[in-house]
Amino acid sequence: MSSELEIAAFIGLDWADQQHVIRLRVAGSTAVEDQRLDQKPETLRAWIGHLRQRFDGRPVAIALEQSRGSLLYALMNVDFLLLYPVNPQNLAQYRKAFYPSGAKDDPQDALLLLEMLEKHRDRLRVWVPDDASTRCLRLLAENRRKLVNRRTALTNHLTSLLKESFPQALDWAGPLDSLRACDFLENWSSLQILQKTSPSRLRKFYREHTRQEAETIQQRLEQIRQAQPLVSDSAVLAAAELMIPALVRQLRCLIESIQQFDQQLKDRFQQHDDYTLFHSLPGAGPALGPRLLSAFGSNRDRFQCAAEVQLLSGIAPVTERSGQSCWVHWRLACPKFLRQSFHEFAAQSILFSGWARAFYDQLRARGASHHAAVRTLAFKWIRILFRCWKTRTPYDEQIYLASLRRRGSPLCAALSPTPQEVPCE
Image (tube, rainbow, N blue to C red):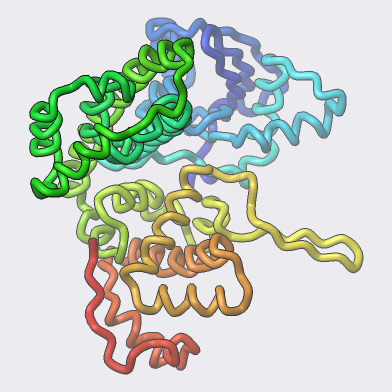
């Protein structure tokens, strides 16, 4: 529909932290105007007001090299602006076609964006933002994942440090990504300090932090009393006694922050209009449900077919042919978090869906690796999810199994004649 609008002007905008470079061509003109804007809210608002007044509120098309960020957030609610985000890799390849040396310059990129917009607008898509609740879910889910990755990095660092100086703590403290382990290691960062602690205090700690019986706790206290240190080098021990609490303090902060994100995601997910749809998916749960919801979004016109989702997410494989050779491999250029969301959901669905387990087992029996089988399962799931999303219909395992039997799917042979209802997390 946007391609049929009468565009008043075309803009190529190369953004930066400090200054934005703009190339503007009025429709029907050959002259290209050059402008630079400081990254200040007042300057940007004044520029938007100038465009509105100059073109009398008629549509202005803007190509820019991003799909999110402060600039896009500032422009997305301006009614007369049509935003065309360009993939950075697409721009890089387009630039390389004219500048093989690899030279890059902001004014040059702004001009290339303008040229792509004018000559290839039919291949670009106007960016339509999701509603506020969906955008919030997406940002919460992505930021939560970043915190989880940092927590993993910290626990790996802490594990390595404990193996060098206090390996017994890996059994006695509990999982390192728990508050129990944080409490243990903040109190006892070395075996020497732990063995100087009274049995009554240790017994109180385990009673408050675990559900172990008195006999089990007593056995643990005996292990602590008889334990021998791995190293006796005072330099190693002194450095570890200082570093372990430093890592634990950071870890505690991350654990508590992740818990807050989990609560926010749960509350906002339950309030979303599509909650019933994505909550019905087997294995989605409170973490993957919001990620799948935000992957599809609230705009039902964003994707016209399931193949678009499969390609965008990187779940669909890439085929390369040259002469007599043919190579099929997984897609490298894609939004990694999006691909990870579908991959992790497919892996979880194996535990909750009978047909998913049968499909995965068949692929493994044919020699596929675990991840290759999960990607193939995700490819199949996307077709199902797309149909549910388009029609706003919650997923029903029994309906899908009945459909498999009507079509005479080979999966039916691996399924029970009367499958039990599959529980959702």
